[in-house]
Length: 157
Length: 157
DNA sequence: CGCATATGTTTCGATATGAAAGTAATTACT
DNA sequence: AGTAATTACTTTCATATCGAAACATATGCG
Image (tube, each protein chain N blue to C red):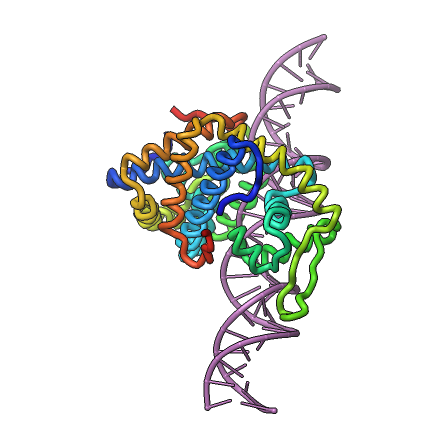
């Protein structure tokens, strides 16, 4: 029973959808957190490594925009990855305010090894939906997200 | 451009839906975090107060099951709410391991005042979708979540 | 050049989160 | 009854997360 709130029908419907959305996301996050946790990574760390693998070296600001995380957060996460020798920070020569982050060979090996299982896992989770339903879900979420994306720096095609 | 990964079509489709789902959720969470933040609450704190308002006093374990949060988390969140005089802990007489949590009058006033705006906000966000689409989204998310819910203690009617 | 402003990162403080270990109370088993 | 197993919560520890403020570097403009 998603909600006990007596509001307008619009509110009740939206709250119902909202709660289901959040629950699904929580469940999926928990599942993936568990999976990447087996490799000693958090989801945030995994996200950084994956971005670097698929998009190439990036400064902290760009990573934050890509992952929708604050700069201070990225400092922490990248710091922890750096401590473990999975990424390196390199001050940019042409603008010394900027710090570029790149995978080390060790980091590249790790994320290259882990990502396929991650993709399979997500495919497995979403196999509860037909391919049409998956696309519908994506479309609905895109519409929802777009109605909110403010300063996201949404360079989506 | 959601993903640059070259996997099977199944994987690519699932990853695409996954990223959109996560982005939408992140955007909504950020928006609601901002809103409840104006009242000096985090989303987690708000969730606890809301559960207590709509479902009545509850022990920490039940709160955790309801909110899908770990016990250690609830200890922290309830502790912070208690410090601010919004909830009270009461060891249960019949089983002294259990600690019941309830709203104080102050906490009840606060959440009663805040919740309507919260509901309106969510309705506003979801108004980007038609009522049919909202129900579709809810259904798709429910299906997704159910395929994962493991130990959730899903007592949904 | 020199200062004001803009930009990128880090630091700091607070809260959140989960795992694992610890404590206390209850229940189960012999 | 007495010990073992279980249950409920708390504590500890590491990481994550954000926002605000501090810092450093760049850039613009007089």
